[in-house]
Length: 302
Image (cartoon, rainbow, N blue to C red; front, side, top):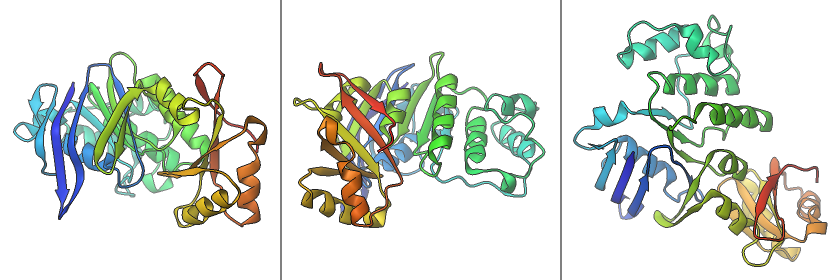
């Protein structure tokens, strides 16, 4: 459904993405993984035809640069930053975007019910919570039942409960052969939604791996063990890295925080070190090996 061939996008002297090749078949679900600035959003914008690029992208057989409108008709897109007219009522927004897509008359109640917003149609958009706005954005993206869904860090602004609910909703909606391309920094989302992971680093596609193997590789490599994924506010990440290194740990940066390998019986150690240094941890995941190369993502109390 999506074929990306030697795509390069430059910003001045630097390259947002460089010679990226990736093929996503019908029914496949690919997560883009990488630190901030790795090129995930840039690649998504190229696929959508929103920015000029070198190379070639075909969506459903349509060249994105030459037949961009036809390509985008096959795509439902949910951006990281939502932009709605706040005074619209929810059902008005559904009807408005349906008309933009050329769908004619729509029953907004049915569309909203599909994403768990039944009975919310008369509310103004400014009255919705962040999670409800994300559900509305997904409902609009799904108008016309597009075969491809593209999402860019759509849970970044949600709390833990909102993320779980939204990911569960996506899991239910995205079967039946629908193709998905999404950017995420969260292993729990990759475990729930992805079949493959495309790892980007400084604009280059480093590798593509099965989602299960990806979680295992981050968690255990060839050594076995446990990794704690700490979600830390951006201004505090450099300090967190220094504190963890001073405590004898080996952390690595991720787009929303830090990954740190620990012994199975010392999972609380990173929390203690960061707490003593006054570094806030907003959320976390525990990735544990089963001793046979498999890994799982868990939520625990440190």
